[in-house]
Image (tube, rainbow, N blue to C red; front, side):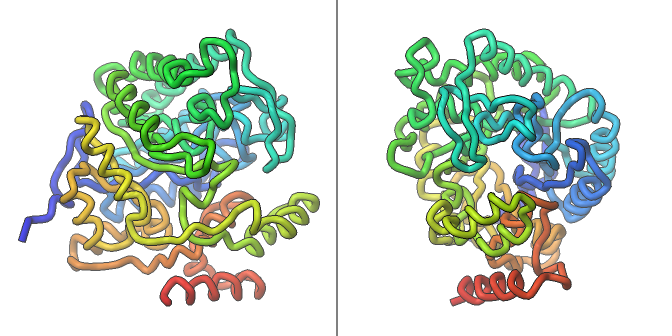
Length: 409
């Protein structure tokens, strides 16, 4: 029997991790006033104490107009001391610290981002809902530079790595996908043109990262719907990111504004989602049309693995597998398939010390059932697993208990 690689060190650029596990960049919703809080500190310290190789603070916007939520991190000089407190705590537990940087593009609203939301092209975001305008050429250059500025702030805050978000239908992804990029200038049309903004961002990031910070990029393997990017173009994007100097890729998929559950799989608990919403009109709309807007996609463990194998054959740089890992058996299978690291989110929301339990007890599965309560909740208040809460309203509890039962059938 082949010996497991799980608890062996691994290099990502200039960074060496103590093992091959990464806490995936999943939005925590723990940044009241767009700044880090004690909740964010406590959660990431608990994951680091739980044995993770590297934990990733998620979805930090590089500019104010890149914010999707009022409780989302905005990476700016004022928050550096609070972030430094978190990275110091992570390091004290023996783990590395990473921060995901990005811009939401059209996935915002004036009330949150302070202006009309921007994207590769003008249009409508039905999820806010709001009108969106396409970026001017000079603004595109400014947005790329903001990614480099964010890396410099991340270094000042003590992070060992940055993860550039180039997937899931956010701004870089909106330039890459023909679904959202209908430009007729040098940033639109051919894939080479649609990758131009991504290359500009990567130039700024790699220059700012220098030779002492690891640069990871989250990229799609498919957008997950007809009219979006398919695996062929996504392979070309991965090869381009390798040429840009990325130290590793996180392989994902899906498009928040069109195929949200392609990213996460399973069902969205609509009653739970609307329960925590504060805007009456949004609560009403999602309650009436949510199952049509957010269709279910069947969950199976390691659901991205078949697509990810194509990327393992296409590029030489380290690859991080993410998507539906909840057991030691499947984690070892992924590592044996040639992937350098595994990333988990929901498993570590359910059980922050899952990595230590795998190390100490061997063949183990965490108790996450992918009922997706944590996802439905995090858009309005902080991320949490329903299994750790005892005061859920009856309609919410009934819904997640039903989804729990369905997950084990």
